[in-house]
Amino acid sequence: MNALVFDLDGTLVDTKYDMLDAGNLLFESQGWETRLKGFIGLQTAIQGGRAILRYGLQREGIDFDNDLLRDYYQLYLVNYEKVLDNKSVVYNGVTDTLAQLQAMGVKLGLCTNKPEKYARELLKRLGLINYFKSSFIGSDTVGVAKPDPKPLLEAIERLREKPKDIFFVGDTNTDEGAAKNANVDFVFCKYGHGFIYKIAIGESAAFKISAFNDLINISKDKS
Image (cartoon, rainbow, N blue to C red; front, side, top):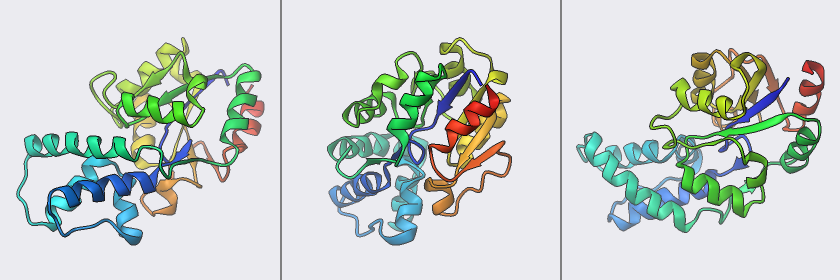
């Protein structure tokens, strides 16, 4: 294996509580009664800002179109920035495993559906930014987001690799779809948001991992 490209939320970092809090801050600022809470609240939050907004708007009985959703999404990002790393934590083994993979000569890239500005700032604060100097793709970096293959293919291109020579590591159906669309082998994280909150099972994954450091053995086997 020459390279690994990673999703961020639910793969490298457990971000669900800050995403939930950002949604509730927005709801409160708009005077809405709706709140994200419990299993359903977290299941919604892990699907990102737009899913949070759709949930809130529908619960409040507000008709919306894409233009209104786009406007509200900018307000969501303002609130997300306030809580960016309040409760977010790096998953066990991530930092040590990334360092070991790098020492093994495995190239590392990132492909997230979080806007690049916020993804970079979060990984900077959590001490992971330097692992992804050459390949860092956010939802707005190339104009489209996963599951469109373009962001993942761009992340691979920036590593100067070919799709057949890398694995994409993620935790959701969106990640799996991006891998399929880019013709890239997928590694599914069973410890992540998607599996825990019952929105993904990694059906087409080449490998399923229960802990991040399982990637070491996969990398050795494929080297």
